[in-house]
Length: 280
Image (cartoon, rainbow, N blue to C red; front, side, top):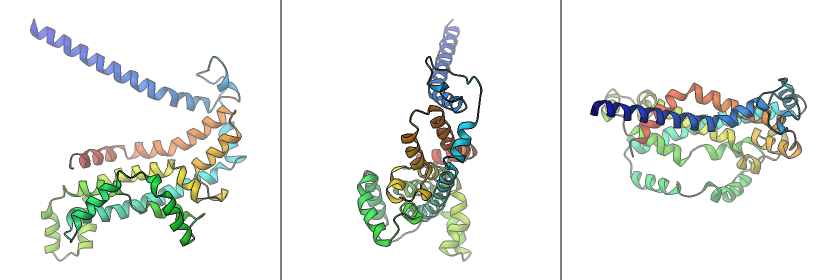
């Protein structure tokens, strides 16, 4: 009797949990599904009351208008270049710094790491004015260098790599040193391959953050031919605020690369995030 009651309670809990998860998934996905459907609706159909869920005559005219009349393809290419370059530079610099703080012994190592952790509580907006003045002194305003250089390293990225690198056995590194490998060779041949999961995680974080970044490219890049996709879409929204279907099409274009990247790297991304989170 008790066993039957326990099984009944367990079954009820299982169904309740999955019902709650399903409801949460529907709440999260419903706006995204409607956005995709609205992007292929004829002009004016998405604004009808009551709202329509399915387009009466699906069309790709809004996507064609974005790339033909509004030249959004150039902004898309700008964002792709900036996000890819920033990801490559950030992963390289953060991997070197995080590995050094985890596995190399030098004077002041712990103090340097503690100082970096203190910077995590400082909002990024606080340093925007000094950073802008510094970049202006270098002549990097309205250039891609002004967008890329600030992303060379991040405290969060260094923290992620360091926490993961702490789990690398010192015996592996010492064996490479005994064989005559330099520290750079040890890092390249032993440390870097073992840190691959967390580097994938960091790369996804960096790419998505740079791809969606609006404020800093808006401040640094004034030339319309160099503007990234979020900045161009903000200007587009101001001009076509009543064209719901066009706005939904632009949102789909912005969202697709992020979804493709996450799905492609999902397994390594989650594995690196979980492995790095358990060591603090």
